[in-house]
Length: 178
Image 1 (cartoon, rainbow, N blue to C red):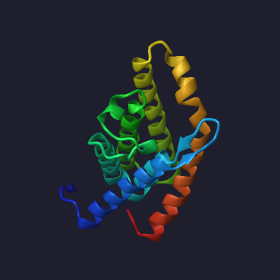
Image 2: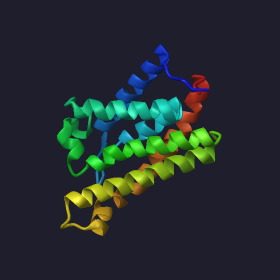
Image 3: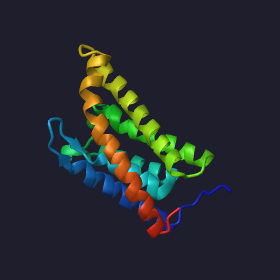
Image 4: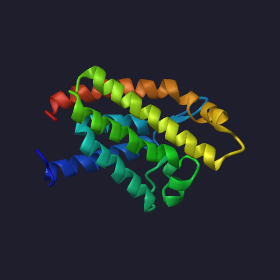
C-alpha cells in the first residue's frame, strides 16, 4: 500500500521530532571529549515515528540549520556548518534514517533488528563523516581522524542507542505509535 499524503498528526510528530533533535543538540555532556544528546534524539525519532517519518524529521532538522536557524550544537546554523569539517556527520544522520527505514520495511521491528539497523546506520554515519572530515583535513589522515572523531564517541553513542531503544519502544507502546 503506497501512501502519498501526510496526516496532520504525522506532520506534527515530524515537527516535534525535529525540535527534539535541536534541543538535544544543544545539550552538551562535558566529559574529556564533550558530546551532545543529538544522536539520541535521532535514534528516538526513528524508533517512535518509524523510518519514513523519522528520516523526514532528521531532514527537516538539517534543512532548518542549512537556512541559518541555529539548531546545531553550540547554537550554530548555516550552510557553512554542513560543508565544514563536521558536516559529514550531520549528513550521515540521514544514513542512519535510511538504513532504519529500508530495514524496517524489509523486516519486522523486533528489538534485535532495530538494534542492528541503528548500529549499522551509526557505523555508516561514522564512516561517511570521517571520510568527509579527512577530505577537508588531509594533513590529519584517516586513522588520526578516526581517533579524534569516532573513538571517543563509541561508548557514549552506544549508551544513547540503548537508552533510545528502551525509552522509544516503551513510549511507542504507551502512545500507540506505529
